[in-house]
Length: 169
Image (cartoon, rainbow, N blue to C red; front, side, top):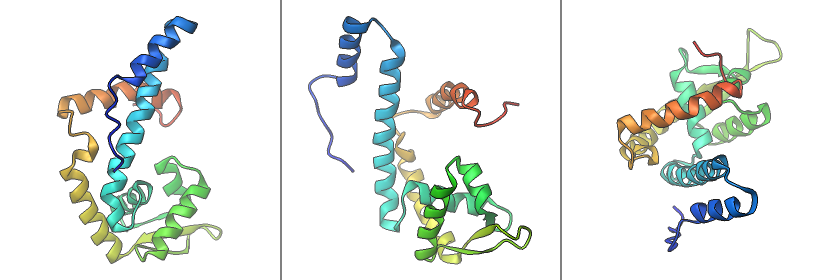
């Protein structure tokens, strides 16, 4: 985990003040900067927890997705769709999991050109252990209670809908 900055002021508030003086008030600038910084903090914390398992958060997410599937396997295209990442990223992620012995790949019998990724027994053990550790540290969000986590999710949902991530119910 990176060393805390411990600055004597909030640099995002300072940037917002300077931005306002220079270009006028734009609350979205401070909001996006806060979101991006929060993403850096959370990713650093979560990656620190999964690193001893030879994982990154992206690899952990792929293992969880395979764990949740009925047969423990999914087509590579479905993994990319569900994780909302580019096919090249899926290939890189899954190939690293294969190298680690956590996932196997084989041709998809239902699609002559496709590939299935399936979680191994070792992959299941690793994802269970990593999940226990991540849950113990509340995925880095321990400073928020259950209700506040729900509010964060609700606040960000319209942005995801507007980006076309999914069709709202």
